Length: 518
Image (cartoon, rainbow, N blue to C red):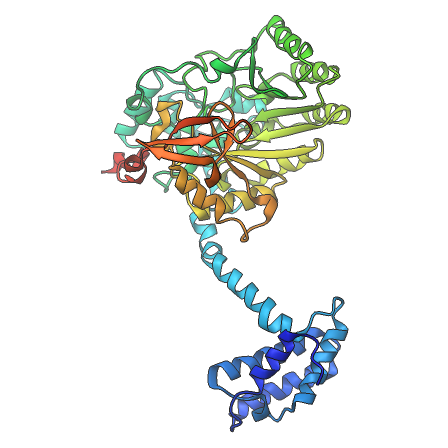
C-alpha cells in the first residue's frame, strides 16, 4: 500500500492498531452512514468526517477500524479519492492528524475572548438601542431638535461645557460633581451631545465617561508644571518635528470634545482659536525651505474643526510643495461628532488625495465609540483617502485588557479603519497618571494578539520619548527605580522612560468614579 505521505501512514497505523471488538449498534449505523456518504458524494467533507470519527473511537475506546468492518484497502480508496478531489493534493492524514487539531487548538485560545467580547467590551453598534434612548433623553433636557442633533453646528451649539449642564445629562454623586467643578476651574471640559449619548449610565467607570468627564485626580496628581508638549521639538511656529522627514502642523487648539487624557490638556487654553494667516504661512515656509521634509501631519486640537475653506487652502499649499509627498490629517471628529463628515469635506479630502496621498489618522480607544453613524463616517472617508489609521492610547479601565483591546482592533477594522499604533499613556502629563498602564501589561496585551486575530488588525505598541519608540521587549534595556531604559532603534540612544506606578494601577477601589460610591 503506497501511502501518499507520512501523515496518512501514521493515521492508518492509529486506526488499525486498536482492538477488534464488538461495537454498539448505533455507532455502527453512524459509521456506515458516513461511509456511504463518503463513497457516493464527490466532496472531501464526508471523507474527513468518517476518518475523524474512526480516530475518535480509536483514541477514546481503543476500537480498531476493523471493528466497523473496514479493511485497509477500503479506507485507502477513500484516502486516494480525497487527495484527487482536493485542488492542492492535501491528504487525509495531513488534514485529520495535523491541520484540524491545529485549528482546534487555535480555537481554544480565542474561545474565552469570543465568549466575553460582546459583554465586557460591547461596541456602539451592539449598544445602539440604548444609545438611541440616551439620545432622546439628552434631546429633551437640552431642547435639541432632530435637525440640530444631526448637524455639526447643532452639536457644537449644545456642547456640554459646564458642571450644571453635565449634572442634568449624567447622574453623578454630589462628590463627583464637586470634583468636576474643581477640575474645570483649570482645565477645559467639552463633550458633544452625541458623544454623551454613548455613555452607559449603569456602568460606574464607563469608558466614554472616563474619556470625557474629568475626575479629581487631574488636579490632585499635578506636581511641577511641565513645558508644553514638544516645546523642545518645535523649530518653527505651529511646527513640531521629531524626525528629519516628518513634521506636524498644530493648526488649531480646538476640538469638538476635550479628552481627559489629552497630551495638550494643560496648554490648550480657555478659548477656541483658529490662528491668523501669518502663523500658517510661517509654518508652511518652514516646510517649503526644508527639502528633507516628505510627510506632513495637520493636527491640532482637531484638524477637522477647521473651516472647510481653511483646511482646503492648507492642503492645497502642501500639495504645491514639490518635496512634500504625503499628507495626514489628525482628527477625533468621526467618533466624537460624526455629523461633521459631509460631502463638502469629503470632496476636499478626495481632491487633495488625487494630487498626493492623504491619510486620515484618528483616535478610537474603545469599541463603544464605533456606532452605526461613526462607522458610516469612516466608510465614506475611506472612499476618498488613501488610508484611515487609528492611534489608540492604552488607558486604565478603557482598553487595558485582552478582551477590550482585541474587540477594539477587530471593531475598527470592520469600520474601515486600520489599527496602527497603541500609545503607552504619556508620562509628561501628571494630570492623568491615574490612567497610565504598566508597559508589561501593554506588551502582554499586544503580543498575545499575534496568531489569534488578523495580522493587519494588530497595532504597534509605542512609547513617546523624543520620538516614537516601539515597545518590543528587545528595546527595553533595563529597569531601575521605576524608570524603564529604552533604546531608540534608529539611533541606538538610550533614554529613561517613567513606567506607570504599579501600586496605583492595581488599586481599583478608588479609581476614577468608583470612589464616589463608597
